[in-house]
Length: 346
Image 1 (cartoon, rainbow, N blue to C red):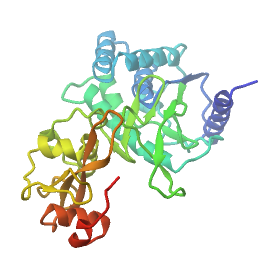
Image 2: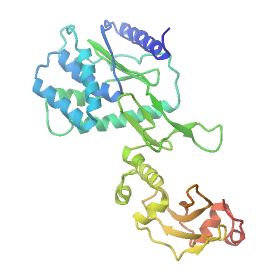
Image 3: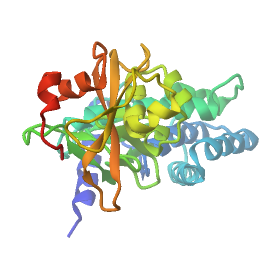
Image 4: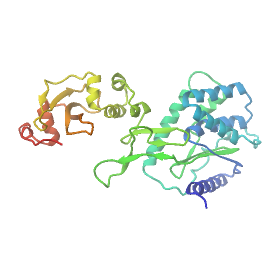
């Protein structure tokens, strides 16, 4: 009995054959599964160049080494395997040049049986962004040759299939990539009916079998350095994208970011009326660091952690808050006088 994935692959191939038939092009004998969208992005143009007569081994080796150096040797091996499988046979017809063999502009998307999920639009956009960056890193710049030029020209020569599959249709071969092997989501809020969002704090939220992955922080596509928490405070502040900057601060934690970024403290620390024995401090956040104008209230959790410590954390409050008590009261929807009478916070 076929596994569900094998059945989906068969459904994909049947749909792909139908698309070729619609434009009157024979379906290729070589149908190659690739391990990730990144492997397919490099393998398809390289294979097309080789299938149309490219014979400069020095250029090919140079490009493959560039893929190893920028995308990693695991991706490089996947690209080599796919290229070998896609070019293991005679080329068909008399068309010349890799771009002339690509059919992505002529074919409608293949329709398979895989279920569509609203999150896959987000995944597709993130794949596009990361592939663009990977191509630029590997074959961008001033250096020119046939293979590099075709990769830059054809890196988007793929089509979606059933929402979460990708395929690269050419005259002599078809490459296809199944869905990711690992997907991490979290609820988008306390409301049980809220749609889940992509999120993972310790690695890629969406990953394929060869290690290519997409990082998301609470639904926002971010660079791996954000999730790995390796950016310096200065790098976070200089990040031009406001949403990525916000995610990096949240990942770092306001308690650490306030110190590392040397944010100015507004007035002295004051005892926390709602958490006896602990203090509150209010810090200024310069305009442009966070997507909105805020200040940050640093406070301490009322509950002791398992290791005996108390977690220090930050809460964003309106920039109009002028002292820690006013800021703490605002987080509870109270006046400063009401917060002064609050019970111990847990």
